Length: 434
Image (cartoon, rainbow, N blue to C red; front, side, top):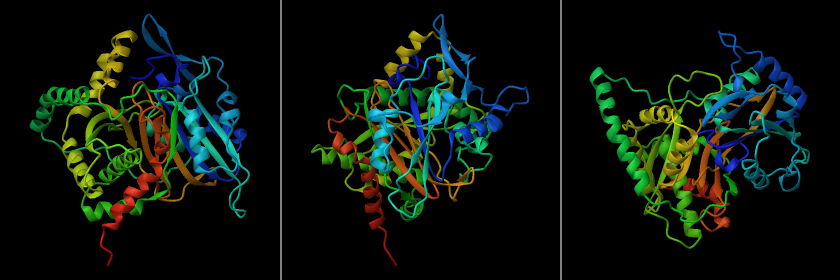
């Protein structure tokens, strides 16, 4: 599903921006030094660069895609001061609304020809809102998702700064199964895959407009992990159910603000890691399409229904089938792969969502405290919205990237981040206080 189109067409590929707010002054010269020492000199047992993808791009030959090494690789092209201007000028002082505007345009920028599609931009906030604050540096990693997944990026950051981030252990949902249970799961794969695919193809999207390939980004206020846990524990649901229900609730509230009735359910593509990540820059993830409640009678009903659906979905073998399908699809030339993926995206999936664990301690990059983290995905093909949640120091940030034409109202799309917090607070109000 990646590298199906030239990297000069950003809305045909999936771009990612990962923004760290750091307390201090991080310079491009220092970052290039760290990259050279810690990334370029890191080798596998076979002597290959662990992160060789960061020196590669892709090319096509006879209808197939191949990795191509940049023979003129120069770190100055990839690690530099923030140098975009005009509408892309970095806001100073930087607040969430200004950052969202910039990120929304960065995810849609094309890449330089024959260069690996990634860059790290360092922007200085020289005018903090509080006169007692020190200078802050915004570390913006922008990359094409074809280079690697979230776990790859996490390991890249840890190796780059020679540290261990305080990320909780990723739950891979590994279950201990007997031989007969494993056999039963293999037999069940075709049935589950067909049912999941039909659900996708026969369901409508929650928007029916022609997409513009221009996006708005909405970033939530910081959401304490403790708030999510309080809701989880009181209603006896999973942590993931709280996050997904909050997103669905924000969408329902936004549609109400636009004067419309939210759909009873929406289809969401969930992505999550596959066990035994091989390391380096690779994509080692899989997917599951879920029909989640949107226009529920109350936030509590939406939460409990989401819990039931995710619990049942955890038994599905569909995540086992996608890696197999993609390997088979890779045997076919690009025109066939493009047609298949466009056909799949044209179905009822309304948005994609990925969640990443929040660090549980104060972390430092090159000795400077990390104050915030926001992760945003661009939209791709006919998928008009992407949602990502992650964060640092026990604080979530929800980022919504929404096509400007998806819902007919940019105003409420820009409020989605705040509506997540409204949904969570309303759930928290249902918890008795002793």
